[in-house]
Image (cartoon, rainbow, N blue to C red):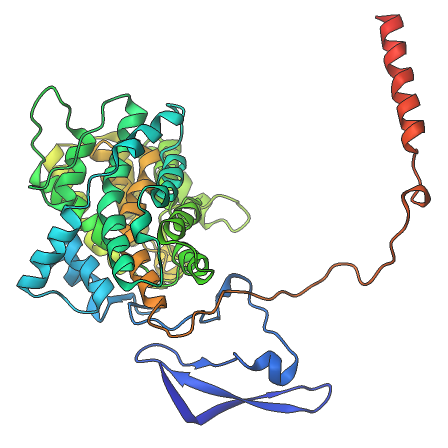
Length: 457
């Protein structure tokens, strides 16, 4: 963001007639912002913006979104180009360092990630403390936070080398922990990572291999998993990324910050959206019920909501959805699941919604969550694992934003203000003057009640 010394906006208080000039700052892309950092000092006022829908909380060079035009760029590169031509670890490098790696840089980066994929053996036994029916995201919250108890040599946030190693470890170990959470829920033994496999291949191998026989990862599914990871790697200042940044502002160690991001991602309004899509499709049941569902979705008095359509940010087609749509068809074709009733329902719902004037006018296009849930189900993942896979991918973005904060110079702890609407100043009233029974009266009443119950029982 660049300072614009010639541009200001004027704030006028109608009550007092006072006015203040606020500087305007321009980014390289997107809307300009009104710099209100000195607003309270100069005027005595705060701004009120629940959900931060009109507030820039930081300056970032990582991801740019234009929701009206359906644009998503990582360091200037369109998401569809990255998904089609790149791989996840290359995108992770781009997010972290700002440029695509050359051959030497990519080789070194892949080596740094690959040789950090194993986890401390005692950490693996940490899983045994959870119930077998524990939600995988609950497990992930615990084990990722626990990494700080095993890797003390990468928790000093003021040491640049330790921060770098922490990023390597988080990106590398997240698939290992996620696969372990999956295996733990099925009762199968954990599978160790393999250094000869790609990031996506290694993850699928750890999820579906068993010690009793060799397991070959389907290349079509591996490429689909790669695209899913790329499409979910970062998405600007969303709830979980903002959570990571806020936790980091306090000086918390990197593992704690990413664990905080995972807890935020777990919310159904954030990372749980693709799970909600599958639940909706299950409730619909069959294609013949779709007209009724479409009718309900159009009825403003009906509380029903069509999941997987529209987006908080995008008021146009989600650019990630276009890539995911094609990937979905490739996976279903490869697995021979074109006749799956649930998937047939999804495809028919998509077809009708894309042709319906109401959805077109409202710009309610299928989003990335609509297709990703279908793909993951087809690949054999239970719904409880959907958000876990999201966390594996988003870790690349989280650590990039975490690192970016240290390049901003002075670290300032996040401290939002509030519009207080509670009671005004009151004087303390002694307990005996507040009415009700005294302690002695309450004791006697309870004793009498119990005695009565004993006599009549």
